[in-house]
Image (cartoon, rainbow, N blue to C red; front, side):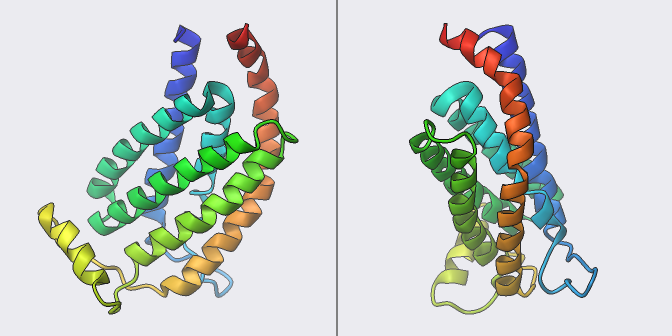
Length: 208
């Protein structure tokens, strides 16, 4: 890996860690404007950019490089989120992040040779749905699905962490969160295309 590759890798890793960490903090705060407090959190506006970063990393470094960024970003984001957010949100975020981002990489790779906008859009739409379902069900569901709370409490307890559950209207939050992700997935195509034009010369050099 050249010095330029290492620099770009470090930028991508720092960016995805910052986005996930910020989202884990902001998701605890409802978006209390225009009567949307029961439907949106501030985290809905930041987390979708993690998929943009992963997709650009996939273009820049290929599947293996993108996976390395996801794995390292996963560890850093979870550790920092345990400290700065809540343990339950850290576990929910880490689980959702790892599964959804790896799915995003797989879908992106399958569509890599299609129109430039198709891989990032389709992979983000599908992966965001899975991410939303996993995160909100673990982070904010405090009800009584048989075995669910016991499992979460057991995971937290085995790690020496108190089982904290922030009670929020998680189903409406999850639906609104996903709708925002869909909108941002479309809007993110513009910066994706701009950055793609910037990194293409490096990709050509790498291939040569």
